[in-house]
Amino acid sequence: MIGFLRKLGFLLKEKKDIYLVDSEKDINFLILSLKKEKIVGIDTEFDWRNTYFPKLSLIQISTKREIFLVDCLKGLDLSFLKNILESDKLIIFHSARSDSTVLKTNLNIEIKKSFDIQIAEKIMRGGNLKGYSSIVSHYFLINLDKSETNSNWLKRPLSEAQKSYASNDVLFLIDIFKKQKKELIKKHLYDQVIDLSNKETFLGSRSLKSMRLKKQGKKLSKRKRQIFLWREEIAESENVPPNFIFKDKFLKTLSDLDPEDKEAKIKIMKILGDSRLTNIFMSENL
Image (cartoon, rainbow, N blue to C red):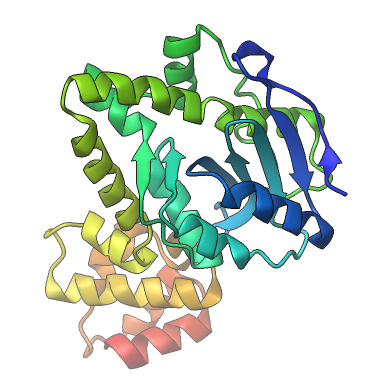
C-alpha cells in the first residue's frame, strides 16, 4: 500500500494528499492516478557532483489533488513513466532543461509537450529568470524553506524535511500555470511560451557531450575541439565529471603539444596524473 505522508496543500484552495512511492506494489495506483490527468507537474532531485551523468534520487509528480514522491533509489521498474510523460499530457516544469536532462539520462524519457513557469514569468515580467521560491512568493505570498536544496539526496531514509521540501517543489506548479496561462492568453503570449518551453525541454534531452560542446561556441580550434571531445568520451565512459580528467585551463596546453617533443609524456602526466590516461591520450591525440 502506498505510504501516506502528510498534507502540505493547506495554503491552496484544494488540499493535496502526498504519497511516497517506494515499492512495486505502489506502481499500479500511481499509473491509474496519472493516466486520467491531462496536466502534471514534474520536478526531480538528483546528485551531480562526482559523476558524468546525474544520479536521480527522486521524481516529484503533482496532479490537481495529489503529489507523488517516487523513490528512484529503490530499484523500481519505472519504464511506465516513459509512455505516460511522453504522451499528449502537458508537463509543467520550473527550469525545464535541467529536469529534462535528468529524465533523459536516467530513464530515456523525452518530454514532448511542456510549459516552463520560469520562462512564462520572464516573458510576462522581463528581467532575469526567477527562482521557484520567488515565483511562488509572487503568486501566493508564501516564503518557501529552501534549506534542503543542497542536502544529501542519495541518503536513505529521506528525512521529513526533505520530503516536505520535495513536495513543495511541485505543490504550486499547476496552480501557477493556471494563473500564468490566463494572463498569457490575454496578452497573446501563450503559444510563444509553449514554443520556448518545448525548445528548452528538447535541449535538455540532447547528449551531454553535444550540449557542452555547443556551450563552447566557436571559440575552440579544431585541435582544441578534438581534445575537448576526447575528455568528454573518457569522462562519459568512466562516469566522472570532465574536470576530473583535466581542468579547462589545461586544454590549451594539451592542444599545443608537439608530437616530437621528447618531454610530451611528462607534461601530459603532470596534467592527467594517471599513467593509463596518459598513454591513451598519447595514442589517440599525438
